[in-house]
Image (cartoon, rainbow, N blue to C red; front, side, top):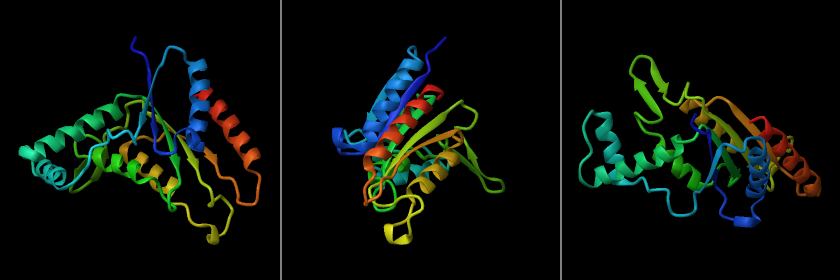
Length: 211
């Protein structure tokens, strides 16, 4: 029986200083203990492996929409998108570490989303019934670690807005992934970071064991 694969997709460029990465490592340690036979891989989105999605790729996407085959530079760009999607799609379990950037998600994670969200890969579309969610029914589930430094639940608008989890989980559901586990670390600027960090790591351990 094939092993279940977990892919950790890291969106922070801060390395060992990243709170989301540290919480992810706690999650992975507990997951590894609970499921020693599963395969774990980490994809650091800042390692240069996420392809660009520029003019050639956009032209390729429009060609595919029209039922044509991408040619030339478009074919090369489309192949890069297919390979990135294949890496993403290879895992049944997905762990994302997602720091908040300017009320949203890091641009490198948005770049990955734009690269792999393609017709025939993540979605289909019908002029009468709308989108179909091509990752639905494939047994995939996601755990998402959300961190922020200023915004936090219950704080007023003076501390910013949350388009981080709202956008990201809307995208996950659009792909067909609806089994979503949240782990949050949102310390306030007025102290309490150590206590909140401890809570986040404890929740990560607990949820990893049953993920």
